[in-house]
Image (cartoon, rainbow, N blue to C red):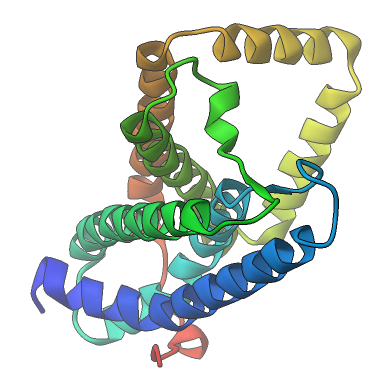
Length: 231
């Protein structure tokens, strides 16, 4: 099967239903918030649509490999081709997600209401430009998806117990004074960096996550019970 078009059909077949449901719920709930804002004092309600998009990207990354890997292999796709097609497909999906969010966000901004349409990326940059916000939407969503994709592949390859161990180590580290202090210092440092440095850190994380996925995909086994045909 063709590397990109074949894997894209499988990936989009698995994603498209949740993609449309996600936007339908987000748009409907936002309209409700806008409607409610007409009955309260001005400036007391904020409408933030970036965070739900990040959550969706994370959930997508955590489920996609499990839902598509064995099915792709059953159609004759090699592990190497699946990996290449998966990375390409996810890049396009994040791009589609970003463009859709831009349209929805600007549409809500044009609706007269008491609710303030707030972009969360204003916390990260002093550059109040549309392209800057769009870039953050794309790169941070991609980073979250890549992180959870790696965790998903680790779970598929080694089982859930490995994730429990990692979660336990993180939990212990958070309650260790020195580690917590370092995390806070690094977070403050990151927030005070210019957009170029922040972008390089995000891009580096994306590359690192996708590179770590590569050998895990090559060693993952076909599982007939997970052969789920996308709807």
